[in-house]
Image 1 (tube, helix red, strand yellow):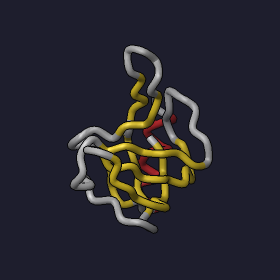
Image 2: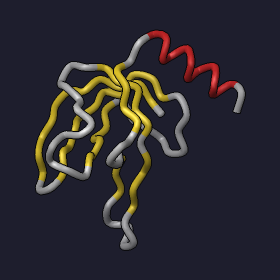
Image 3: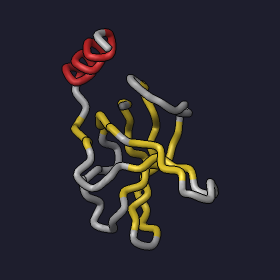
Length: 98
């Protein structure tokens, strides 16, 4: 789970790749750097993420069986909400209780 700002969007085959500035990582099982690529496995850009928008994103690390592909994946129906200070407070409180 992290707070990120969408910097760019690009269609790559049947996927949409977003370049994201990671503003605040909240709960993560893998390290995040300041800029990451976030992949959505369709070309419609669902959920709709707009360039310049800030979101609270829940994604997972996807590594294929050959370990040649290692990326952050936002699955269909994944969690992506417009970020607000309230969202940040709720995530911080939830992280403290885990």
